[in-house]
Each structure stands twice: as C-alpha cells, then as structure tokens.
Length: 99
Ligand SMILES: [Cu+2]
Image (tube, rainbow, N blue to C red; front, top):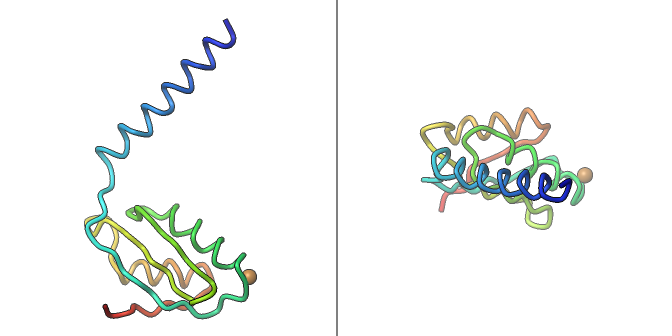
C-alpha cells in the first residue's frame, strides 16, 4: 500500500517534470560570459546553481578553471543583460564573450 503510493507519487513527479519542460522554457540562445571574482570550484558551483534557478535559464555551466559561464536561455524570458545583472547580484562580474 505504502509502496504503491510512493510509486504513484514518483510517476506523477516524473510526468510533471516532463510536461513542464515541454510547455515552459525553450533555449533559443546560448551565451558565454567571462566571470571575475570567483575564488574556487565552490564559487563556480554556487553560481551555476544560482543561474539554473533563474527564470528563463535552461542550462548553465560555470567552470572555475577557465572563469567561464555558458548559459542557454529563452530570450523571451531573460536577456543577456539580465543574465549579467543576475551574476552581479550573486557577487561576480560577467562580461559577454563574443563568439
Ligand atoms: Cu569559492
């Protein structure tokens, strides 16, 4: 009984996530930002998490080794300038890297 309930919740959760992704945010742009102010991998991990929680961001990967943030996002929900502002709010400086 308990197992069945758990299974149902799990299935519902998975389905919910899938459905949400289909209707919600679609990445139509990817930008790279040079980040200054990071001191370690922890900073990069924290900033990655921060970006992933930001509305309109679909994928984010910040690496400390090359001080780079790669962000895939939905331009209907967030702009490159807003991404820079988000990174600044997290305590770092971001400069867009021209491809
Ligand atoms: Cu750090």
